[in-house]
Length: 324
Image (tube, rainbow, N blue to C red):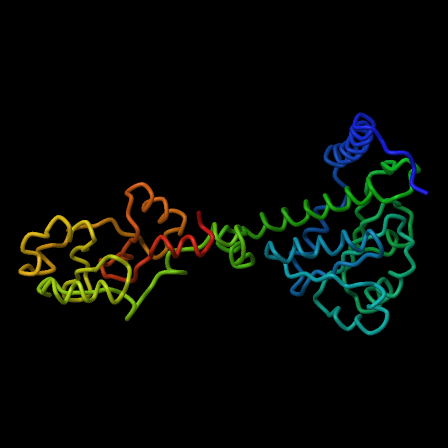
């Protein structure tokens, strides 16, 4: 039977108590990080293989998240379910790997086969547990002991404070490894190509139009032929290039309007705006969009350091990529 509903004030009180208890445990761990943390990070840095993270129950959920964070920040990692490990998946753990095993009590029997496997084959093992004298801690090469803080639930049994501390400790390890490796924003993009994170690190070269898709004419090209080229390519502009693909200017819809009188008797070179605003291939796509927005233009020609035309990026390319 469901119990009585809590009032708004009661819910806020529960939230304040839970968050306060968990924050206090995190503050204690920040004040005095687990002994051996530096050695644990060094073990991972020195390992030529992957980090295999495992845990059972709620610790398993935390282990899965730690593995995902490591993998996305430059440390090859995977989550291994301890039950599956005992039924053949121990073969996923190889020489050169490092294991991080999570257990609040340090006595989780489902981890026993993994513990024995690491000891048998000399695979470094890092324990994350609350009990320093537990089997897991005693068997580990490095034992990271969590604060002996009470769980935040009313009965003091549901994993709350302990899982929060384990999760935060995993983040600390991942960030330490990132900084030790000099993990860059560009590398971060490699592992996060989708969504907003990926869009923030896209370069102009990643989306620009190249080759036959470019609207290109020479300085001596007649405006009749130039208009055909502009219409066929559909970007509303034409690049005027000289010998060697060097950019001389750009023709936009505005240039056409300004030269309506006798337009068809002129050449592309005469109508073009010289020294137009351009993008570089390695420019962030968000920066290119900023240039287009500030100057109220719909496209940028992309030019290399040598002045040669490399491509074209349109405002629609930015929007399709999620940069807005």
